[in-house]
Image (cartoon, rainbow, N blue to C red; front, side, top):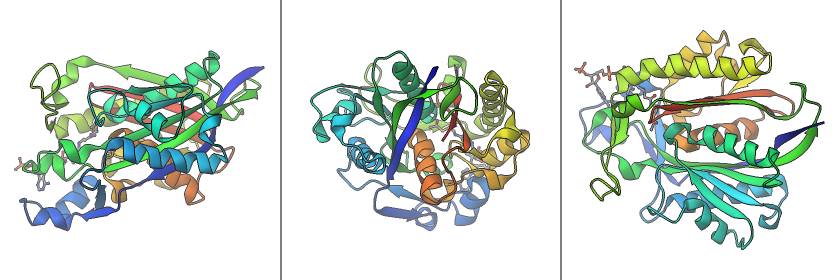
Length: 324
Ligand code: ACO
């Protein structure tokens, strides 16, 4: 018998304010056409003034619990992947815990920028398999609009706000790759790439949150190469290849990165969940948002083999292979 961490419910939340590309044409030397063709992004959501990352996370968590038919009493712990927390501390996870009315269990945050949800999911899987919890809420939530330099056209048009959450429980499996649940994962980072993507502020440097800085072009090349290799590694761990996958649910940074990775894996685009046109890059929220949209639109069904991969600041990158 092999214990498997299985998705029991999923949900998401997007702030009300929809920002089309045309809004940036008013203040920047940019066009809707440039943003669409270079990134695939058509619109994104921005959180309202005063709306925080934990507000988005709580709404996504409630949606996932409802989808699972569970209440906060059924949850043993909360892991939130975010790089845009409400405060330096305490964690967003403990804020979510309080809002859900939970006085039991534990909560903590994971920070691996755009790869954060992959790292959070892998941690959740390990905690469940090790017997530390029976059921966890795993959330990706971000308000990247708060760390944009609105004068930098090469970054501020690319990001958005949102949150996605899933409930991960335990189920007996056989040990075969036909089991439901998380089948394998692959995590990587390489701090030599720090300057490719970073925020130019922080607690022990400037004392302020700072703004996002990115060398988009070299990062693009790193992304396609590293996303393909981590996906292949996760698949190889359980004797599978790209053609076995029903759905790739990638980090949604740029449609050209998504297309390049799918091509390298030999998969057609009709087996890829794409939300970048509507959400922009929501960092750690992008994969749970895309998973939730994939389920909501009836594409991802129970039993499907789903591969998620992401790369972000660090650089940090990785993938999770699971059977829905
Ligand atoms: N509007 C018009 N022109 C622009 C804009 C804009 N919004 N932004 C940049 N340009 C210009 C540049 O100034 C440059 O002009 P130049 O040739 O005169 O110097 C030209 O467009 C081309 O710029 P590139 O950066 O070479 O454009 P590229 O095709 O690489 O696309 C992009 C840029 C979209 C940023 C792309 O490189 C990309 O997506 N990179 C990867 C981002 C990524 O993967 N992030 C993932 C992690 S994110 C995270 O962890 C938080």
